[in-house]
Image (cartoon, rainbow, N blue to C red; front, side):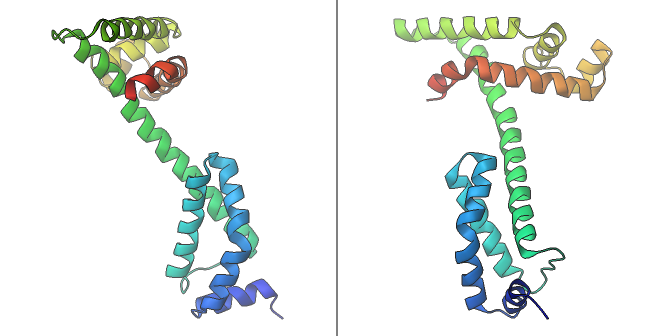
Length: 192
């Protein structure tokens, strides 16, 4: 004899909107709380859970649930949250460092005089960037400078320092994480 949740899945596969609404009303809030524990962002959590329910409806005929319904939904939310965080980290790592190096390069060559406050803030930020880069561990700092200031590829850096490309990636990730943390107050102001 099938239990209640297996019956719901069968009804969902047959296109029962009543089964879909029942699943949504009974699981949505709980899944949003779970997603929010991963993301610490209620808006993103609600989007992820809403996307999951949309996916369930759109792919209802081919969905195969081999575990319990609760387990399937929780695992789906967890995986979607981890994917979201991974994509967010990738976007953050690729966008933010270019802003740092673009800022220091573009403003060093800018001959247009700004207000004294702009000049003061620029000098202070440059000083903070140099101090933050100087505080990186030696190999991490060398990798960062070769990548961002000398525009070397990861392969060129690895060959020059006699380390693997994965080690270069590790050092860059570490450098960017530390710089983000050390410069967060200034970058928030600059990006604003």
